[in-house]
Amino acid sequence: MKKCFSLFVAMCLSLQCIAQDAELYDTWYLKSYSYDLGDTFYIEDVNPRINPTLVIDSNLNFTGQVCNEYGGSFSYNSATDKLVMDFFYVCICGSCNNPPASHVTLEDDYFDYFGEGAAYTYEVYNSGTGAKELLLFVAAGFDLWYSNTPLSIPGNQKKTFTLYPNPVTETLIISSEGEIIESLSVYTVSGKKVIEFTENTNVLNVSGLSEGLYFLEIITVKGKHLQKFFKK
Image (cartoon, rainbow, N blue to C red; front, side, top):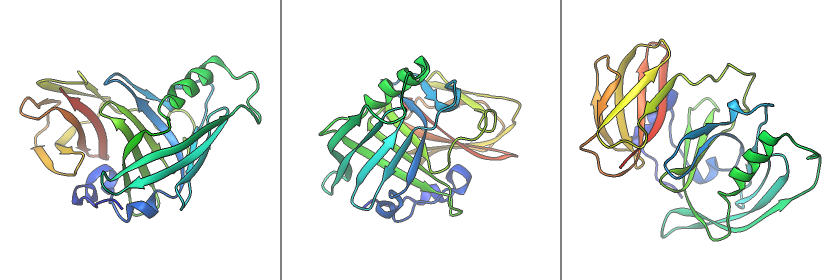
């Protein structure tokens, strides 16, 4: 269903892209979301803690839960290589009684991404050790990041790097929390490496890039980190 991009053999802790239609069929936990080329909102920052889920089966039916339960079905459009949402519902039921305001806000934001007829670009990244990540987006700047591993206790998934400005026109600055950057690589969503910088730096000139979504691979002594940014 999906093309495999050799790029992701090296990306995000040596993530590999394989048999992506089958790789979709899993239980996914929401990690972050962003919209309208704005800030990224991380689920680990929501208090009290919550683990929104998305479960996709082999028929592309899906169910999930934020506070309330939801479900629906996708179909695959081979002409556009996208998932199309054929049906979506929210069940105001179950154990979601008097949720905290932070959960209500998260749920309202999250359900805004789901609509019948919407077409989603998707990528599945596989580490080869069972850990996977899923990216869904309907347009540049409107994306959902998932992992097949639930969020753990606070602090275990602390954000190490911040990119700004994002969106960027010329100079992208990488802010790190005490980690020394050894190299930087920029990739398109199709897996093509367009920039590589192998010296210690936290500034990257991206003025030559076309407008769109890109992935930044950051290599430090502690491993590889993947961040996304938008060039405008």
